[in-house]
Length: 320
Image (cartoon, rainbow, N blue to C red):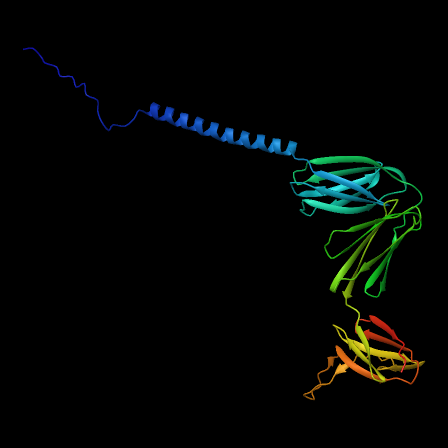
């Protein structure tokens, strides 16, 4: 009897993978993951190297008379700035304190000297700066600035013992006005400036030929002068007086005799009468006063002062 053999050619489903296949798949995954990590690290290192190599701090140094103004700006935090003269110790260290911008004034030695300056950022990158500066024996004194109030104006004076270059002045944050020294007055510049109404600050900058600079400011309270109007009323003169802020005193001289609302010069202003009999005092801003005149020729000089110290003088010579 012939034996019939049956061979099953269908693949089995759901059976376990061969161990070699599993190991091969795992090895491929590890290799791919490692290549990704290496690529990211290389990209980061390249970017960092490129950033470090191209990022350089900006160093600006200007000479101001006997001093140097150093301004360092960087897109990274500055660790410190060091400098010395002529590569000779001692070395001065200016701490960065995590700042991106540092401004310092340093003394400039007399004669010809080379500044050796280094800027070190938080990555340890060092940028060197070297330049020669000259300070001649002579003018190292900054100009002087004076203020003198002249009525509703202020007189500003800038002077230098050697040679003045120019003076600038401006109120508050306005654009400055520049006044240069001339050959006729090389050591001094003067200017009269109208005081603005209200409280304002006047700024003055004076620079001499050697580059020495002085900056000064002064607050001023602007006010207008009192108004005085004199008219004749029969044998008397009528004085009509007013001021926007308040009247401090009235004084007048009639035919050589002086009269004053404050003969003791106490400085007390004139107050308006209170209708409610309260203790509140209000400074008088306008009033009218009548003065009899003598027969014949008269000479009258009237002076009115307001509480800001401004004065108006008016003269009259009536004949009765």
